[in-house]
Amino acid sequence: MHSNASIAISALCVGIISGCSPDQPINAAQPAAEVPAQVVAAADAITLPVSLNAVMVALVDHASEPLWLDAYDPPNTDARWREAEYNAYQMAVSGKLIQLAGSGPNDVDWVADPQWKVFAEEMSAAGVDALTAVQAKDVTALNEAGDRLVASCESCHKKFKPGLTSMGLYKSPNYPPPR
Image (tube, rainbow, N blue to C red; front, side):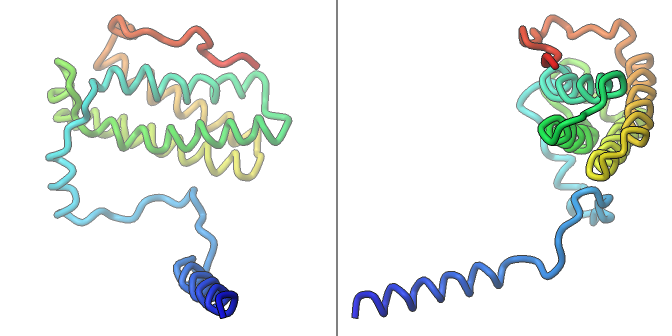
């Protein structure tokens, strides 16, 4: 009796879980859909608990620089391609994340500037391009995405942080990661 109940419960759980999975596989490299105005208004009320500079040093720097290095030493193993994919995801998301003000002294002014949003969107788009390239294991496309990312970052830094400094924030001793 106990085993029949266990089998029935297990079958019920499998049925419920399988009903939650999508009919089609999710392609992570698809651009985001248009965001409703109510969601945008809610996002405007969100403030990051750290400065945008901290986000740049801790997230953007650690994802972008390995992608740039891939131009000189392209991934040649599954592990390296997975690392590149991980970094591309971070870049795609980072461009959206830095559109939220953080706790830094310049953050509110930066995100209020329309040019900041243009640069941030370009970073995100370059990240999506890198993700698409990595998923196809296309080194040429990955290099093009890296060039696009460099252009976006350099343009933004030229306008908003001409010194390209980390403003005193520490980078880990393994930065960038050894190859």
